[in-house]
Length: 487
Image (cartoon, rainbow, N blue to C red; front, side, top):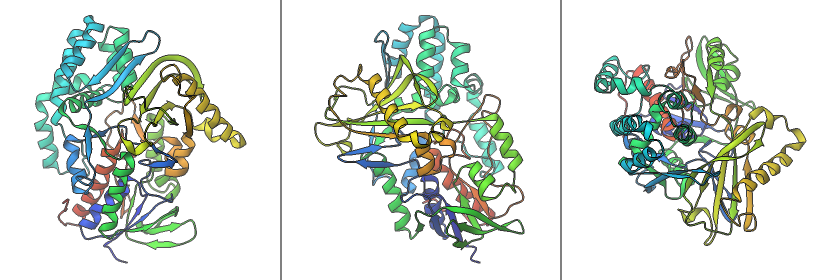
């Protein structure tokens, strides 16, 4: 077999990234993708005359920007820097707080809300500014001991900040904020289970101009990466499902597809979920117990219902992204909901014809509930759309009257189209005890397999997926005793 040939399972961002970097390093690659299109959860689709954007609400730049440049996504795709990131709105009393790129002004607004928390808010401001130049984390199985020591030394001056904000946002807000409204703002705008360090990064990046949206939306970003992979000569097998990673003498020998086709290779990069890779494709033969233990202690990203409404109304004055809080509780797929994230796609003409826009609501839901609807599944989606639309009517007058198209993606949709295990579109959210546990990209006792994607980068997201594909190839090159070429 050719040890310069790599089979990549999954054509999402991690798989495409790994493919591009592998091709740069003189490997041949074949991406095997379950869906009929590439991109994974980084996707968009048409509901004429509308384009439904299924992924990038905002893109993280800064230290991550070089990855987009190495992959020729930039400057092919233009980025629109966000001056205004999101808005928190309490629908009970109309209170509004906008998160803009002026951190001093934001802290003045929040201090007026909660003067008793002025000291902690000042600490948030200082820490956010300190985090503006902090680069993305890299696992100990990819970087050298020297690089690890250097990274620790470079961060030594932030030791007290790291200690203070290393806890989940919900825990930090409960322990360090006295004002209940302020607690509510932070735990609704930011996921309460992610590290408070994430909050600092977002606020610091926003002020620095590192948050943006790609012109042309998710589709433009995804398509640029697809073109980059194909232009380098990467091979594709679409609408092909891997049924087994073939192994002999504890060495990868390739993959077997659902139609019986075997693709031989001594190198496989799997971007499938950890449960899919370990328990199904490898039949539980390698580190299954460790994975089962992780499943007991780590949380998965909550599945969501993404409801999109094409309307004959621009809502030009509405914020592009907002959190609606204290809405009248309603059930959504087995969960009681009282807040939702809403996006109004009014900042880019690619999403709708003139005079129209797309309003999207993202609501947490339950995978098991949707997976057991049976013949009632489509009726459940229609009911979900109607329930969400009812909650949007007060904030978007006339939305039902001007409604022209409706699209609902359930947690089951994320599984069927992108193999997002149990609808967890970004993989793990580690709990407090295991918040920063590193997940290795190799399995003990098995040679030739590398794992990449959001399931080995807790917290997930577009930059993490792209970085993960890069790190997998970097590790592969290091083990082959060859220099890693990034650009």
